[in-house]
Length: 446
Image (cartoon, rainbow, N blue to C red; front, side):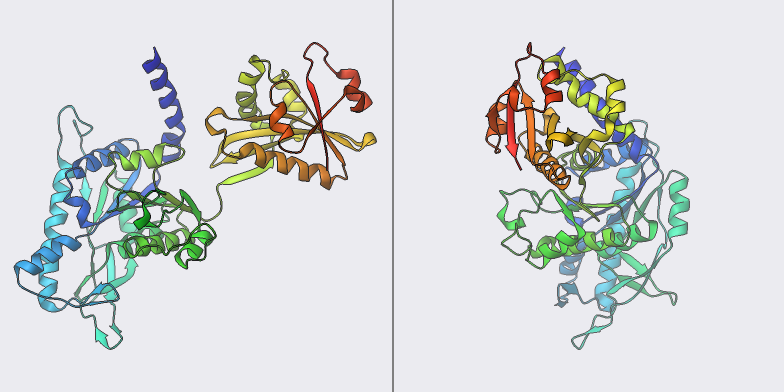
């Protein structure tokens, strides 16, 4: 029964994501290191799963280690400048050979159907083309980068046409000029420009790192789970209050690319370690994710409740009402009093609520119905709501905030409330006091 309950609960929890992602464009960028990993086939399985859920997928691959291997086999040495490979004509031939091989290997994996796996009876069509127009990187510090280029234009209409037919679009880190030249590009440059041109819902970079957001991984700079564009820029400049170290070079360029994409209209960008099995599923279909997500604005918001929030508030308070912690409120009463409520939400999920009932004659307010979702307790959300309610009361010229509680006496005392008697309540509240519940009266002077 426990496993069945867990399965039902899990399935219900992912259903909103499935609904939200259907028909949306996701761009994945991953390096050649990932392709050599034995778990790469699991990533392909997960891509197939996303495709079956109606997500429109664009895959942009890299090939740095494969290119280096081909150069070594040809006994060719190349220079690098500011981390960029100088691609001369001889090196370009190695680049084309390595990229072509990787491209076809990925296409083959996407095309296979394995019994008893997510790829069973798969019919994924892979589409590629000259979607990327490139131009030379030019001369930097007096060095001509020759066939090393950068994206000039993306044929978004052609890519959209392929996606509308249900194809997975596979794009290599090569670009072409109107004069027929071929340029060696970086995966992050191509993936970023493709995501921007398609106005993608998500740009997801899979990193060759153990965990890009773990506080235990010193070499990765301990990226936070969530960043706004402004916070990401500060982090890159080593000015973020929570960061005392520079973002390592190994992820700095990807963080810059992810930030740029988000700034240019991509809804969300993600940095995920590819080493975790099912990494993209964990990031996309769980609330906390396992990587770092960048958005234009913060995802957490305190706001006035609206009539459409009644159902969510009921889900928060009904378990507490059943335990006798909160006084029962009917849906009808909630609808009438909805303007008294404040809700705390994160990325569209309601984490908590609280209500403020004024007694202006006595310059007093009641804090009521403070509730936090059980999955998100002990994370400071209650403090956040309480401080907001206190500010709201003070802005109304209220000097006294009181609460009636049967279970959270110590929590409120730790936050500045003091014991009081029913005689200290507003007269209207005294008349409504339920002596059967014997709630503790606590008061805080603002």
